[in-house]
Image (cartoon, rainbow, N blue to C red; front, side, top):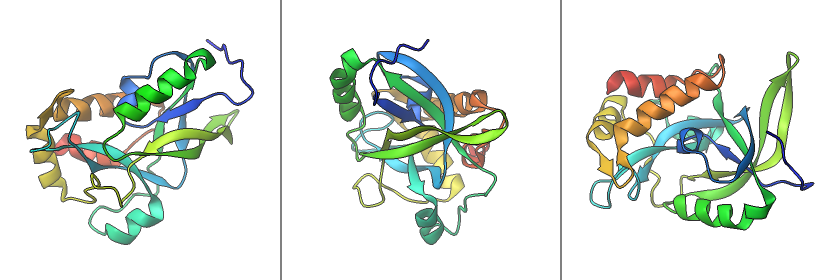
Length: 196
């Protein structure tokens, strides 16, 4: 359904739980992918999939060159692509949705502008210039960085928070990413599922 009325609509890219739990007041959605980023369980979750005493793990985006520089134990395969969904928000509710998402992503995430890519008629195209995306940079207090896969999987398996079990987040995200596109393989998600 397309109801976009603004020349510069408010578009949010979901690459984590927003894929399976979309924001309110969406008038259009389209699968797409990012270039130059990796998706990793590198962010602590004190308020959703864990607690302050036992934070869970959720995904964040990291610039590929930054990840390669500090994470030799978990390299990003070149064939992996960060797929997600671009959500266009009804302009009448833009400020309400911004407040909702700012609150939801308050545990260390920063709002960035990114380009979202897709494939149309066999060619790569930019679906949206300067869409918004919440990213947990490596200088925020909740950023955990790279952890050994086995230890990370065990931590996800046992963590629980106000939004539910951390392992359910992993499973729902893995299933949702697989549904986005045949090209949407994510080896990090697959490794977590195998380790759990």
